[in-house]
Length: 293
Image (cartoon, helix red, strand yellow):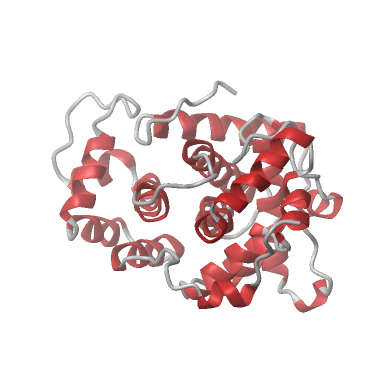
């Protein structure tokens, strides 16, 4: 019998990752449909380390720019506002969640590759399914598995054994985690987002991205739609071999979530093309080996 984890333990745990002020400000800009390129550039320019990282990535071969970019304002002009927001958010979240910490059982490269892929897939699914704020879907995708990082921090070797069991027994990853740890990474991640004071719709979408709520009528329709987008994006990435842990099969696909998104072959192809483009652009940045989808 493995060690169990409760929400009360998570609430009392003092060493959980926190969000620096710059990440909070980036999230505010990303989630605000009225924000401008000037707002994003001002945030980046106010943090020298972040500005340096953004300029390094913008000038990398992944973006194929013919002339060197030397200022944040120039980067905004060359990349566009939406691309810059996603790039800055990726850098800041990666630094805080993973780059400063050494995972025990979690494979950092697999986890981050999966998070980037689901973010790209969720944004594209949001567009094709007419969800009104695609950037919100991207943020949800980027953060959807943060509960795994928390479990890795708190349970350490115990969570590593859970991941070993998933690898060795051909088990559904979400079901095996729940059986061995007593709680899902989705619920843990939702709790972490609540501690970060992020919008409730993100908390709910992440909490229910693997299972239907027992009382769906109590959940806002937008949250159910976003959870369904996350679920299908997550499944699509797992099915392409882009899981967050080593496992021989993806988590089960929920028919209700699939019906909410109304995914068909044409939409699936568009989603995976978006994922492929996103991973190729960001592979150099995080030293990942982006697969050819």
